[in-house]
Image (cartoon, rainbow, N blue to C red):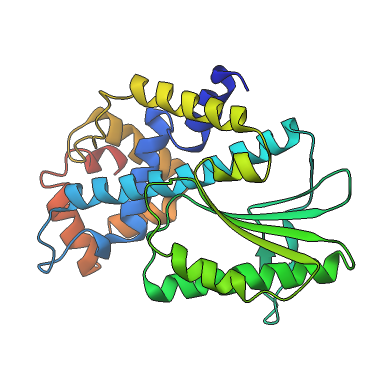
Length: 270
């Protein structure tokens, strides 16, 4: 995979252009004002917003790693299958992070997370969901051998490895083989393609080096041209949100006091 393609895919998934980012910021604040205001928050609204944006970037980065692995799986000669694998007993749709098959018609399932740092409740839920998806795949592809793996791409954190290994050891289904992998282990032991891991790490390292001086910032809501343009665009595309922002609802009154103290930019949409 060429670095140019890697970077374009990363940017399209995570790093929006400034106009789109400002519109996203504004929409987020109006949709959930209670997340940014109130006496029981030690941080101001702008600081809290930056925190939420960084968390959003982390989540989108996990999605990006899924997208990239899907492309690498195809490059390695496997056949990607429909990630919508079916429904659980409650009727909720089940989606796999990766599902593909090899030339021997073995079915592979990979459930991905960036790092293994979950608390005890979440780790149990995650493993239960993993098993639920395996059962659904067994129904969809009867009599196929299934190789199912949990993969944490960041090998530095292995908080629940012992728990997962204990659960995997309880497997008695001859048609299902279970694994847990960290970092490069999946490329060594499952794909036998350590070169792919090396390329992925090289691309990540180059991109991080290019962005080493980037600092996430939010334009001034009250006076900046960027937010004024975002307000004008939002009024055109979603006037109901603007109506909320300008309403007498106490939450929005407080929000305007904190983010739009002089009302300079709000006058642009009146």
